Length: 435
Image (cartoon, rainbow, N blue to C red; front, top):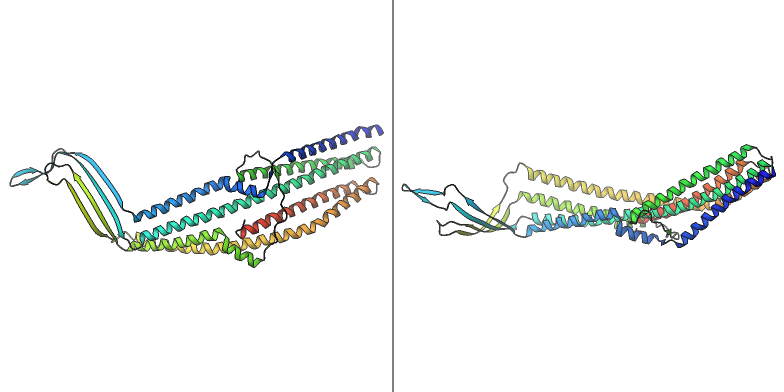
């Protein structure tokens, strides 16, 4: 029986040596890896995030809308020209004689300049609406940027959390490997049943399986962080752990800042003002338009003295009936304005809810940290006691395994509480428009 014991102990020792070597190599790689801070990740996201790159096009598109609206202040210049071939030239009958009035073939061109003199604010309202929508889109970009920043924070601290959980899983594997060794020795000495040995082997396999899941979670979070920051997906670095964030602000102060700073509210406010300008523009459709026009019309014609006609016109254009299209456009603009105002009120309430929820989550996470901190020492002491009892043959293998599971769970809960607090604090800053 002693020979069998010696045959099994080296296998466990080899596993511990391999695990230690892997840990050492990991430390060496980490020391050589690039250190990445949260601020650097945010800077990279602002410069290279694919979603923000797409959103940035909206600002340039709306800038062109503004340029189009301003074109109403400038004259419109039109040119047309061509060459005509007729079967027979036009002629008139004078005292039973036909007199041709134009050539059978001729070239012609026309140049017309039209300028709106006054349109009862239609162009001004259209320009103001386009300018306000351009500002709204700029604020929307800022809002989208802050959404991306929050995703970066969640991914960043998610990696740190997964790293700590992975470390707890490694520690559990070491503990259960050691427990398997003890159970093997006691079984070979005939002190415990084979059930203890099988139970230790199954629990060790379970710990290895959960370590694989923890490693996979960390890898997936790295992939998401690299996607958010525009880095190659295989990139890895050593993430810098920040100190605890600043204390949480009072609810009243935080709400005032949120309502004053949130870019979503600024965007919707500009959208409401643009809706008011749209109502003014649609109302101007009921009024006439005063315009001036200058033109040159040339036709190559040997039959007439004046081949070019110069003209200047000042006129008034007004629509008498368009099938109630102007009325429908005005009603549509009024309804759209009401919708935008309701959207603004809805956004204010959603921001209040977002802020209150974030503050609650941060406070609860802080309380969880204080609660679990003391439980870690208690869990370590509980594991030590149950391990000693088992080796002294006054405790069971189940007690040891339960103590190991409890300690791993406590450590995992602590790591999650720490990083949940970091993320909740970032959500509070984002809700206040300060992330």
